[in-house]
Length: 114
Image: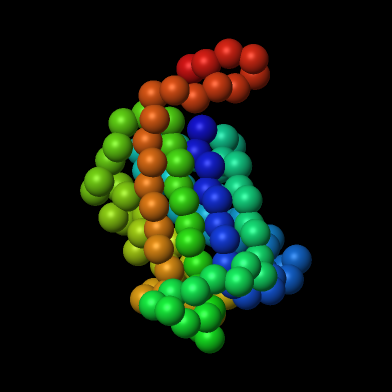
């Protein structure tokens, strides 16, 4: 039940969004027990974002939410991969993105909770 919520300052094309979907679908498997078959994505582009008081560079904020317990080792691997993906697909430098992780034991789906 992972959800990746992306806010980026750049405009994205349908091809870029498709590539992000595909590559993030593969990357989520770095977190044990997670797979693309349960992954939900939100890619919001053209956000007016400031980082270090400036907004002249492509910037991203990515939130990775998962059901279950935190896994710092897996999250570290995921950070390396997500940074690579957004850099290659959207041209966002690693030092201009934040990635936040949240794990929860409370997750609802299909009218009930897991």
